[in-house]
Amino acid sequence: MDDDLDILLTNDDGIESPGFKTLYDSLSELGDVTAVAPATDQSAVGRAISSTVDIAEHELGYAIEGTPADCVVAGLQSICPDPDLVVSGCNKGANLGHYVLGRSGTVSAAVEAAFFGVPAIAASLYVPIDPDEDREWTDVDVPESKYDEATRATTYLVEHALGAGVFDNADYLNLNAPVPDYCTGDIEITRPSHMYDMDATVDNGIASLHDRVWERMAAGEIPDPEGTDRRAVVDGHISVSPLTAPHTTEHHDALDALAETYGSD
Image 1 (cartoon, rainbow, N blue to C red):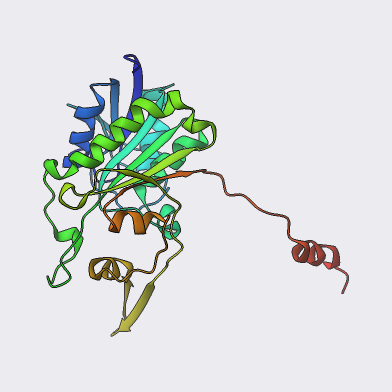
Image 2 (image 1 turned 120 degrees about the vertical axis):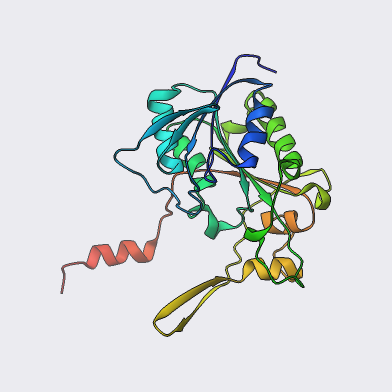
C-alpha cells in the first residue's frame, strides 16, 4: 500500500449522501482524499458541463453547485491537481449496461477523469426491490451500513489496481456491488450488458418514459448472459468492468464508398 496515495473523490448523489461519506472514510485510510462533489443530487446528468460554478468549503472538502463533470474538471485543474486516482461514488443505484454509461453522473465523472489521463473508478450499489412491493428502488432508504461491501471492494481496487498495472489497458473501472444481504462477496470481471428495454406512453400531452430493465431485474427475468455486468450483480457478485473512455470507430467500406461518390450526382 502507498501511504502517500492522493485521491480525488466525487459522486453524483451529492456530498451529503451516505455512500459518499462511507467511501470517504474508507479511502482516507489509504492516503489523502480530497472531496470535490456536487452540493446537491445530480443523478443521471451524464457529462453535462458548466462554464461557471459556485464552490463552498465543506467539512469533507468542497461542495460544487454543478455536475460531476464540473467537479472533476475543477478538481483536476485547480483544487487537487495530479492525484493518483479519481474515485466516483458510492452511488445509490446500480449503473449497469452500455446504455447507462453515458447517462450516469457517477460513471461520467470517471470518464471525464480518463480524458485527463487520470485512472478512475466508478462505484455503485445495486439495491434490489421486492417485485411484490409497490415502490421503486429510488424510494428505498439505504443507510451507510448497506454500502459496506461496495466500499470494501472499491477500497481494495484503489489500493491494488495501480500497482497491478490494471490501468495499462483500461481507462476506468465500473464497479457495481449488491447490498450486503444479497452479495456473495466475490468479484467478477464483466462486460457491459447490451440489453435495452425502454418504452414510453403518452397521455393527455404528457410523455412518460419507462426503463423496464429495473422491473425485470426485480422479477429475476433478465436474459443477460454470463459475463455481463447485470447478470453478475443479479446473481450476487461484485461486477467490475474495465472500460475505455474515447469513442472509437472502425473501418467501414460501405461508408468509404458513399464518401467517394459524394457530389458526383
